[in-house]
Length: 303
Image (tube, rainbow, N blue to C red; front, side):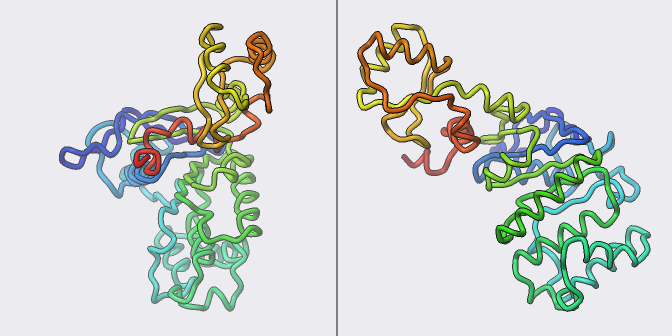
């Protein structure tokens, strides 16, 4: 299990992570989402002891990462696949990691096979690897010690569709066997497919968290019409809250915090013709993500 409680990180007058609290539980995949610069990577670096926190705690299996006697046996980490030693071969990197953890070098062959790196590929120097191959090597290193927890930052970068499917199945199987997976990714569809729980961060603060089903179910109703002003006035008169959904659904769309039947009745009474009326959760994770982080998006801020 991963527990983050009141975690804060400041760099001078800038607060990168601001009172972040969440838990990633065993047997589940937790998706950690947020726009660039939201604080995801800083939070994960604090978890694994690479960056000191200003205040708060981050614990893995009930202890700080620095207090784990042999961290690789308890938590597997992949934060930057390109940070591996470019002059060593893939096999050498795994062999060094295995010896550091006190493991038999037989584990090296097992992991190479598990991540589908061939003997020829494992004998190449990492500088000659594609990004996808480096991701596979990084995942092999993270899994080497058979840890109970995985912390992965953008592990699908550089993988082709078959590789993404492979990674999804691997992580799903890992969680189903009782492991804890914290997964950061910008590939929202992949998070939507694999994640059980979601934690959304923006400008260093948690803006939403819960099970995937809970967050998507709270999306309300998506309604589209050519007469948005009239519908908006009718929704205000009916005391229904709504927001514009232009970021994902178009300038003629609203997301209403009510069920579709009620929204349809309001539109009918107002004489507004609707082009679309449906539960907004069908729009998926992308719409929820963009709306929750609209004020923290680089593009949104520029607009």
